[in-house]
Picture 1 (spheres, rainbow, N blue to C red):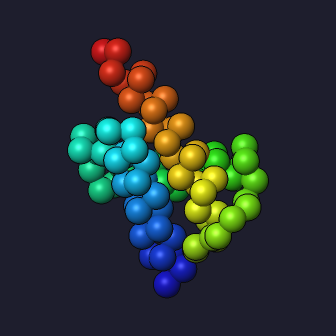
Picture 2 (picture 1 turned 180 degrees about the horizontal axis):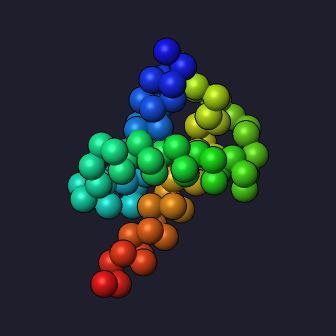
Length: 80
């Protein structure tokens, strides 16, 4: 159950990051989950794990990390 919960929370974090950066409509469910999970790891590595957490992910640093990840990836993929 822990893995499923992590995937759900990662997907929600990725969807929030996509909505904030206005890139969410072009991302699918799998991309949202990946952006949420990788962004969570990135955000917690940079900012630490403060604030409320769900499924082992600190929500605020995770969302900030996912926003950074989505913005950087869309910047490089948008140049093609």
